[in-house]
Image 1 (cartoon, rainbow, N blue to C red):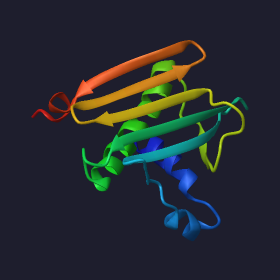
Image 2: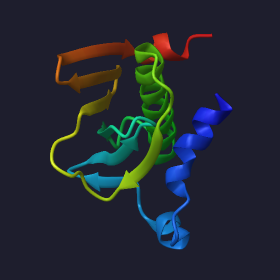
Image 3: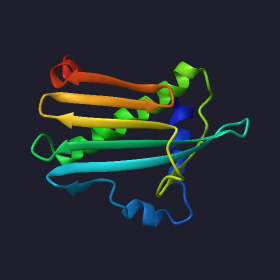
Image 4: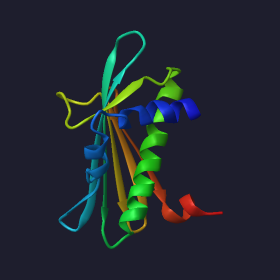
Length: 139
């Protein structure tokens, strides 16, 4: 797990880290928090892949901090689960400012008053997972 987190955080290690640290990762558009993240992955066999992660939530549903926390946690878990299920080692990941063409995998995270839906889109199709907040936070 630690190796996976180090691999993911390697995209954070850029030459101009100060610009990266000052970049807004969440915007407010039409009364919703919105965040988009683009990753370029390179595997040990030379193959490459792009992943797009998008998240939205009405601002009245939660604080910006909670939106960032949930978005970051869910997106990291989804990426790690994708490679774990495929039996593939965690690739070298670099953040992109924008996609180069179409993404190979898209994760859409939609947060709402009653819960969250995660939509995964690949060449094989689309899958939705819907969860209520009380199911997520039950102790």
